[in-house]
Every structure is written in C-alpha cells, then in structure tokens.
Image 1: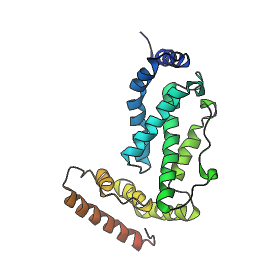
Image 2: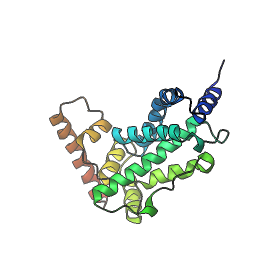
Image 3: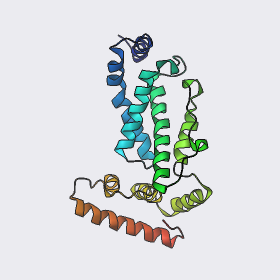
Image 4: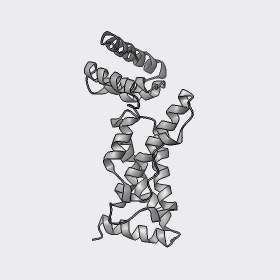
Length: 209
C-alpha cells in the first residue's frame, strides 16, 4: 500500500520535471486539506474572512506548483510545508488589509520575510507572527491583557477580538454567534445586543473598544 509520504514524493518529483498533469493533481490533493487547516488556525485568532482564508490557501499551493524547488524533501512533509506557507500568506494578507483600512502606508520592514524553502521554517515563529496580528503595539497588548481578565474565553472573547480589530461586517459576527441562518435584520439586532453588552462589560473594567 502506497503511503502519504510516497505519494508526496512522487508528486514533487513530477512537478520538478514539469509533468503537465502534476499541477492539477497537486491542487486536487492539497487545496481543501490546506484550506481546512488555515480556517482552523485563523478562527483560533479571530480571523473569519473566508476570502482571506481562501486567497492564502490558493496562493500557497500555487506558489509551490510554480516553484517546487523551494520545497526540500526530508525537512518536513509537503503537507506541513504548505500549511505553514498558507499561514504565512494569511498573516501578510491580514496585515495589508488592516493597514489599508487604517489608511496607513505599508513599510517593507513590517512584512514577513519571504521564506526561501522550508529549511528556514520556524513553526513557533509563524505562530507568534499570527498572534502579532492582534497584538502589534504595547497599547494593544495592555488593552488585550485587561480584556482577557474581563471577558471569559469563548465566543464573547472572539467577538471582542473582532471589535478590537475593527471588524464591521454583521455577517462575520453572525458566523461566530452561529446565527448566520437568520434574516439579516434579525442578525443585526442580535449582533448589536451582544456588542453593546460586551462594550458595557469592558467599560466597567476600564477598557474602551
């Protein structure tokens, strides 16, 4: 029976020699797997934009298809390599989107250095950078620390993270609350009730959102 490592090695070798059918097989094998991984990791940190998650997934997989030489077999599995690449792409996309919405210019020094191959992949560094999306200043770190003391972990804390991040879409909050099936007016009403309640809790604790 052919195991996953052997399948990955065969696909990689075929990409390197530009087998015309390899690209489609790689996309079929990894797009949904990587997308699921990125979605889970993103939700842990309060990122619920399906377009960003999808774009990061597609960018990682197709960048590998275009440049398979970046991957070094033996350093990690291909699946791990693509998962981490997609997380890295998501970090950069969220940072760009945030700065765009704030009307700030992106500076080269705030972008993640593009990792050339998986030799330099540091899983903990990737995780820390994803956390930094939310805690990118001393003020935000202090504010979030206070928030974590006031709001219990769970949906409420996820909602507060989104509010602190400047999220405005009712649909995003509705997804967290599990009310996406309700009519839009009802979603807006429920989301507003939750946001008002949380703002009052934070205000009493000395935190402004």
